[in-house]
Length: 135
Image (cartoon, rainbow, N blue to C red; front, top):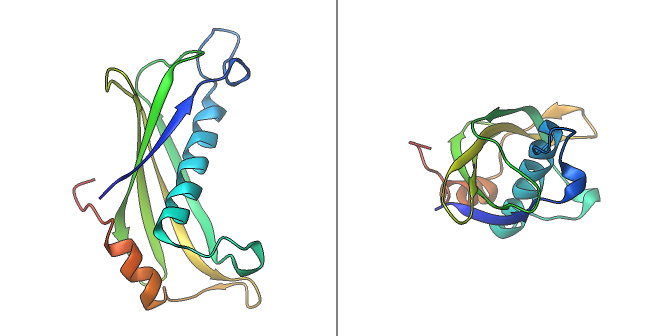
């Protein structure tokens, strides 16, 4: 089951050519991940935060513009011992046209030891409910 987030492109998120700036896509993906984590039931208290990004990628497929209504669709694509991957699709909300696609690898991390830790069973269970292996 995928998670969806609506985004309206602001003028400040565009570049001199009138397109969505490439950095703005990463902001949309971050916002989608945070909202996805909330929907999954992750503890959002910063002092209890246990997830860091190991990598993030975005492929720009079609142009996006100011005032465009977008939809960011997120799903879990892989679950490892201490890490998991999330895939994202950014689509035009009205037409469904693919604008960009991205993925991120996240690690369950212990900030005291500065090392990764195995995913707790409760988090693994939450992630498995949103696993789309063909994503």
